[in-house]
Length: 546
Ligand SMILES: Nc1ncnc2c1ncn2[C@@H]1O[C@H](COP(=O)(O)OP(=O)(O)OP(=O)(O)O)[C@@H](O)[C@H]1O
Image (cartoon, rainbow, N blue to C red; front, side):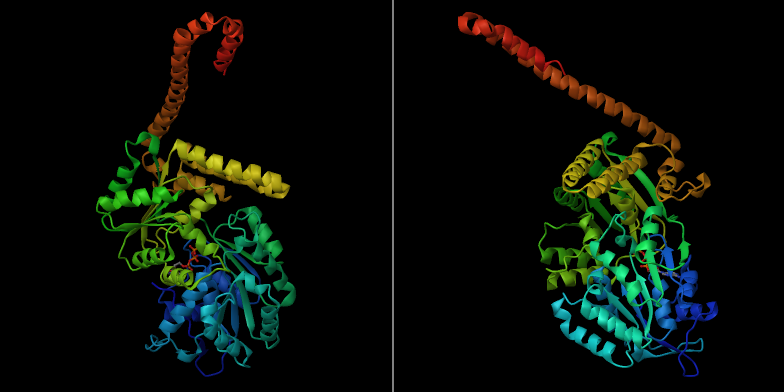
């Protein structure tokens, strides 16, 4: 289901007031979104902010965080400001806004009047030129005594600008600023995996509009990140709501490349066994995306590669095709998710914007398989990316192809980044060291024995009982098989090490033989070289001394 647009509501009787009781809030949810009840901590978060409290809300990927500010926007006259790092979110909602105005024809059956002309969702970013006309309308609406906007989506970059701050202060002085929601709040923390410097500037919001409740939302916050977020935003005695990170509808599995004859063929067979389902395959390198995509296509799977090496037109069409189900599998670099979090603001051309827009217009909820064809850099990244599976809550699968070479390559990349950063600043160096230890968690997820789900949850500081998994990971479902794989992996590593050592040795022995048979007699036959023979020999013997 698409995220709905939010026509403002009036309580029957005409005078607008705040809706805050559970029953009335559930009615709003049913009427606007068609869902029968709130999920997890949604209701508690909504009631907390409606009562004027600050709130820190931790929900799993796909948990329904947006509802925590969308319902308050419906429940009370005024504006909810949403700070989102996903530029596309702003567009998505605006697009939906334009699609939606005509679609609310049914009559609310629950005594709450629908008011079609009061939709208020908007984007607000001065860097995007092609929506200037739209922005003008938003400015006019905000400046009017009675703005019709209900949800105002802004980028963190905009918050820092003087122009926006003074506009916000005006809205606030008219008593119209109801709530500030900070989506993806972990971006504010330098300990967060998606740290964005511009998020730090949000700390000034508390001083500017001290009495407006702030709602911080995130899906990935280790205890250190949580504290950092709460401190940075100066949340006052916040209601802290934490849902479990557990994604019970995702089955976790690791496949060992070193034990497979052909990892491409293996993935191909798995995808085929599912029929024509929607999947994302993440690869570390563009070349792998291209190769794998060709391989899958040749084997009858409807798929395409997606990475930064493609031109804008091609990327747009791949996204378009994937979203509209023309292709089912996209083989992408992690940029597929990342560019949504790190859009290039200054060079945001029309194409990129449309592309993001297309992508987010209906971010597919029915992704059945998320495959990591190369090991991700951290558990947080893995959780976020694999979390794109099964956002519709239906059974889905996370598949990770683990290879020793991939591990070494990632260690090399992270190690290199570390040594570079160490040279630049010590605090950066500390962060980089963290990135290596984060990666080790990921290695342990693959190479260690025991429940995968438990490992994910524990890496976020969540205690998980062994009974939680219910055989929804390969290690719990097929413990003997996984144990055998791990044993074989260790053996194959030892054999590989031995082989590579003996390969070197053999090649050096060959060299030695040649030298002995041909070069040595020559050395002897030339008197001046004969004098050097001891040195030459000691040079060769040095070569063996490793
Ligand atoms: N109470 C509910 N009942 C059923 N579905 C819901 C409910 N609340 C939200 N949803 C749906 O769940 C899906 C995920 O919601 P949303 O995009 O807000 O998740 P999220 O927490 O922001 O996820 P992510 O962190 O992955 O971005 C959406 O399709 C949304 O409509």
